[in-house]
Each structure stands twice: as structure tokens, then as C-alpha cells.
Length: 139
View (cartoon, helix red, strand yellow):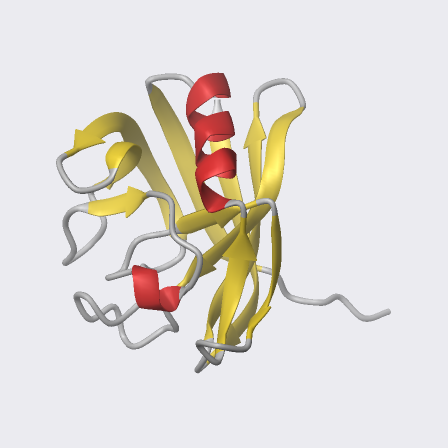
């Protein structure tokens, strides 16, 4: 079982991606919000693209989450309920849809708690997380 995150918008306002929880087809799909890329700095940047292992984790602050392990030079990277980069310190927020949050002047995802609950309900205790940037292909 794997969670695929395909980043499609990397801006100073945040990073957006699609998410797909897959196991012989897509089980859950949605979107993600992350911090902008800032050189993998702790609490300021999204994590580098790559393939990671994640495990179900009970966070004292966020409740049940997925903990992404072995991120270079980083620790405690979670997939937890979060609607915009203001809610993140380097983690990943899942959502059912995305848009612009006028009050915060940020990119955002909607229904984050519901989407996280779907991921946790359908996902295994340990999953692979594959993160990459979408790049267009031209003929």
C-alpha cells in the first residue's frame, strides 16, 4: 500500500499536490498542502521529494496521524489535519479539495480532518509515501 503525493503547485504561498492512497487501484484521493520549498529547513520547508516509509502514530498534539520516517535532516514529519501552511511546521495536510483562503492569503485544502480520517480508515498501519513534482510533458 502506498500514498502517492504529486506536487503540482510550488509557490511562496505554499505547495499543493494531489494524493492517492493506492492498493490495486486508488482507494482514497484528494489534495495536499505543504510549506513552500525552503531548502529542507526545519519548521520552514516542505520535505524533499522521495520515497519514505510511514507508520500510524498517536501524536499528543494531533491525535492519530501517519508519521513519515527517515526524512533526511528532519524528524517528526506527520500527515495530519491542516488546512493551510499556517497550520504546518513541515508536515503534510490532506484535504478533499483545494483553493485560496482569502482571510489567510494562502493556498489551502478543505475538509482536512475528514480526508485524514479516510486515509487512516483505509490505510494500513505502515505505508510507503512517494512524493514527487509533476512536470508537464510536451510533444
